[in-house]
Length: 440
Image 1 (cartoon, helix red, strand yellow):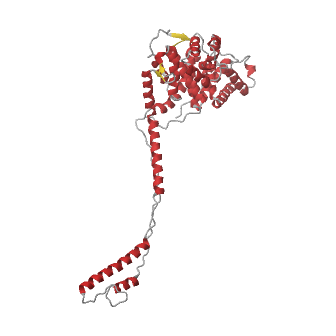
Image 2 (cartoon, helix red, strand yellow):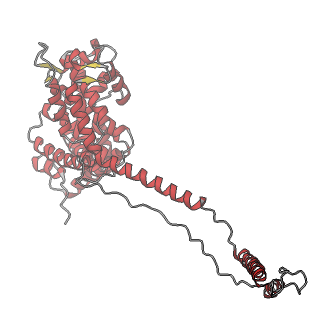
Image 3 (spheres, rainbow, N blue to C red):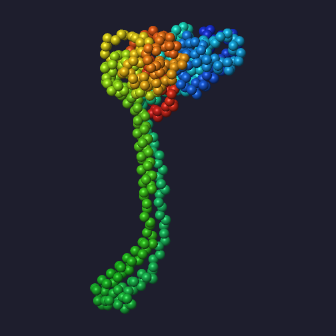
């Protein structure tokens, strides 16, 4: 039996965030607006992070692009909405945005990845009040969907199911029976020629009283006559040579294709184990492939940021939530270099812009993220800000929805960046193919 689908708009209604005065028609128009926005989000998944940060931040201004998009959709469904609200109902639009995000995430797995990762970054640092439980419920639902999908990429099955060989044997070569005619007259003539010297062209020159010589000549002549007759008959039924190249070529192609399928099946089934093994090696080595140096050679907060980038490049788009926790544990392995326990968001962004060692992160951010307009990811600031002197608390809060004076530890900072990178990749590339390996 299918479980009922949670409608988060009704929870906002219960909290009083949405007030329709008990008129169902108004609620239906709000519902239609969320579905309309979900449809637009499916067409433009890159807006997921923008919608999420705008919806999660109670301080989002009415002029924010995501709020404006939500209001435009509400007006499309409810032409007299301005008569109900004297100004842009930001709280209502935020609720519509969340419902749209959930709707779209249920339809599109990559949107689900971006929504969950972005929400996990923002929610701990915004004052949601009673709304927090609604958000946590929505994130829990969609995160379960993402983790279920991620199991296909990460789980190693107890049994590897191999495909059957697809081969159709060629038609057998059937030889048809042929009738053979023996030339009796010729055989009789040859036997007569072997009987004695009394016949033309005799094979036997001996008289019957010369029995020993006659018998030997007679048997020789008879043998040659019969052998010639048999050879002539065999020539009549001789088969054409059989060309085995086509059937052997077909068999060779079938075997090659089958072996390739076996390797693919084995590779898919063991990919999760190989990935986990590689990550354990990475964690123990603490070596950066992008920097070609040990993470220990960098200050801890710089190393944490670079580790987030390197881990992101090692794992697939669909990864369980535990991967971020794995990153935090790896960062804790870094030596204590007398750095502060935590740094403010403003300090961390300035560090990311000014560090030579974080050039790979800045380069990746400029490619993955669009220049921030309104709400957006922190790495959009890193990728599109040329000088750290241009950073200020107001712009950081406006873009990220997180106050610039929020302090993060190195593991927390690394996890935030990792989730932003995962969210960006999910919505900027085609949907990855499902692994053909089957989970146990």
